[in-house]
Image (cartoon, rainbow, N blue to C red):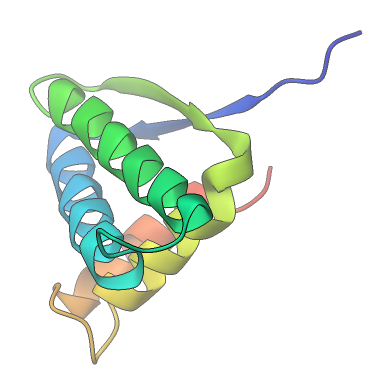
Length: 102
C-alpha cells in the first residue's frame, strides 16, 4: 500500500486567506530568494501552497497539502500569528490546530 503524501485541512475562506498570507510572508522571511537549493524548494512549496489556499478562499472546502511540509506550515502559522509576528495573534489558537497531526 502506498503511503499518503498529502493531508487535508477544512477551513473557511477567511481562514484559508489568513493561512495563505502567513505562508507567503514566512516563505520570504525564512527562505529568501538566493538561498540554498533546499531553501528555494521550501520557498516555492510555500508559495504554491499559499496559491492553493488563495484559490479556495472564495469557497468553503477542504484543501490537500503536502504532508512533508506540515511542520513548515505549522512553523509559519506559529510565527506569523505569534505576539512577535505580523499577523493577528488572536487567530493562532484558531488556526494552529488545523496542522496538528491527525
